[in-house]
Amino acid sequence: MRVFVTGATGFIGSAVVRELLDAGHTVTGLARSDTSAEALTAAGAAVHRGSLDDPDSLRRGAAAADGACHLAFVHDFSELSEFAASCALDLRAIETIGEVFAGTGKPFVVTSGTPGLDRGRVATEEDLAAPESFVSVRQPSEVAAVALAERGVRSSVVRLPRSVHGTGDKGLVPGLIAVARQTGRAAYVGDGTNRWPAVHRLDAARLYRWALESAPAGTRYHAVGDEGLPMRDIAELIATRLGVRAASVTADEAAGTLGFLGRVAALDCPASSTLTQKRTGWQPVEVGLMADLEAGHYFDDAQ
Ligand SMILES: NC(=O)c1ccc[n+]([C@@H]2O[C@H](COP(=O)([O-])OP(=O)(O)OC[C@H]3O[C@@H](n4cnc5c(N)ncnc54)[C@H](OP(=O)(O)O)[C@@H]3O)[C@@H](O)[C@H]2O)c1
Image (cartoon, rainbow, N blue to C red):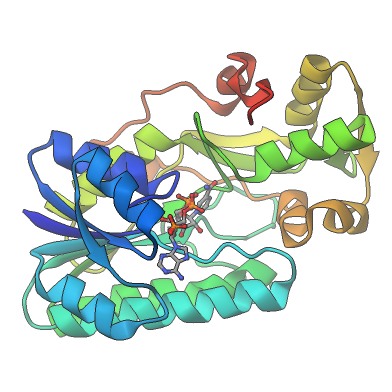
């Protein structure tokens, strides 16, 4: 299949590209800079120049493809308003590619996040984000993707958990480690019992491939390995590795050091992939987040 991948140079997108190429697909990645174009060429993918801000470039990329995986996202977590603007751009990109695929039955795999329920129970594929939760701002993208099924697109959604980990991670966990280095304390919020789901990027990439090849139209999947790791356990492991102390902070303090991501870190949002595993045969096979942290690469000076 000729697959158009947005976010193909990213931490997860590059793993998806590798997974698709290894399975014999042809990949064309969206590149907004020479650096990204060079990275795609080095990975063995073709380059399509363009950007999320340029809908025509998305239209052209999709028109030349048999299917698409959308992982590009503007990661500005400085304020909730910035995140909301990124979500609005994401929605427009999904609608643009969906328009090109309408009536073709082509597969279109869209990225979302596991729901922010924060209600003390494990979220499933059947749940939506609690409307009052600030993370529900991303939900319109997911709803739009599922709705494309009514328009003759074999759309599906892969929901990623709070922490997608592996070598090259630049997300929440490296953020916590950087703050711990600066402040001399590895922070957890409150009593640290709030739980984070997690998955290894290579496991996530396998689920994208399955969804592209096989997902029925209008379906949602959870790429979840660890259902819910208490934040305090993560902080204590970081503290041990860095030789600092683990310490409780308030949600406001976490937001003060990590911005919007600090507020995300404070949520109790366990999520399961039981239904995904039953419906797809996909299973996480890579190491979990704690073992990945134990492996040491998160604490290399280069990180
Ligand atoms: N990493 C996690 O822990 C995690 C957790 C939950 C959900 N997610 C979601 O998973 C997806 C992939 O995340 P990631 O961690 O792989 O992200 P990443 O490493 O930050 O990569 C982002 C990708 O989006 C591209 N991009 C950013 N702005 C763009 C623009 N204006 N136009 C075109 N391309 C643009 C980047 O291209 P350049 O190479 O040009 O910068 C890059 O390929 C995102 O939707 C993210 O929100 C990630």
